[in-house]
Image 1 (cartoon, rainbow, N blue to C red):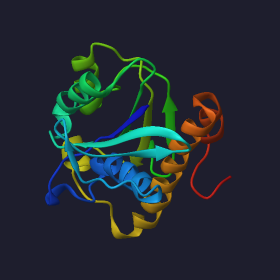
Image 2: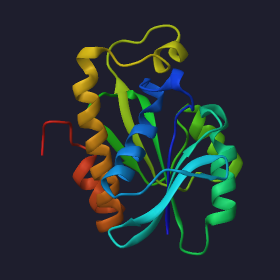
Image 3: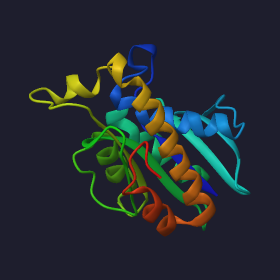
Length: 192
């Protein structure tokens, strides 16, 4: 079984913000595979189903970004069994909009949601899909930048990168991490 957690902040005031792109990717994955995200499961809105014949749980933590570890810890503690994989999808302010980066493991890179998950689980050896949100030079208050919505002219690129990230997750499930990394890490929207 794979548990795919998209990071973001709950509530209508955060919908469409840069920090919530993890929510958007996992929601798009659910929609494409007919997985209803209508269960309350371990501090998350979640859905269970199959992707490429693999059992999956898709989850959107409702604990706010900085406390994502609380939801991830509950899901992993209650749902993970031997041979179960966790994949986290989050935004990355250091990657330009239109690019994604798959990693097998590693530090949080300063992302507070990942910091919370690593702290709660006591490990950083889980795959993560980082979705670029950098659209311009973001001087000063990073919090204000990540909590702001994308500009109207950027919305098309957002839709494309959400699809790119969704396809990368499907590739990970169908063909494995190595193939997905090779295929998607150097790719940008509009390229193949």
